[in-house]
Length: 164
Image (cartoon, rainbow, N blue to C red; front, top):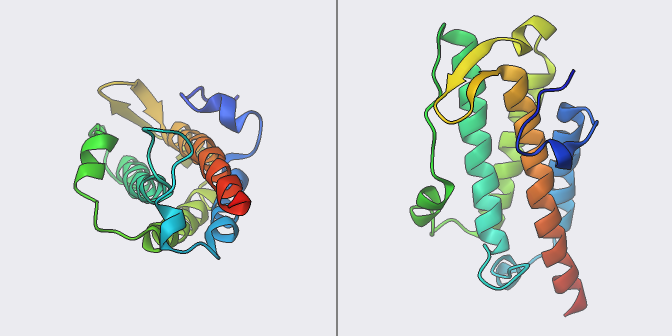
């Protein structure tokens, strides 16, 4: 049975590793022809730009991939929470293209890592101060659903880019 995460609805019953690979490929194709001005567009007033979404996706790949690796190598591992908005304030100089590239590469690295895990590895426990008792499988499902959630926002921006 799949773990329940805040992004379970976005993932639905899809295989999370397959969904991760598909999300990264969709981002790569969607943003391939975008110029710098397109990465500064948002899907709604007051929301993050495409550049910020892509930076956030890359940051999250880095953080969640590290959590999974730490859980698998550190008995009793307790994950450190992070504030995505605070991280974004420190990451304002990364270009949209570099954010997209970083996300795609980190996604490939994590998807390969997750895809090679044995079922028992995916059940490795960890703790999180906000979410409580988790498993590596929870991280994998959370990551995949999170990517789909933000991919939908990027697709809305893509529709705006195509319409201009």
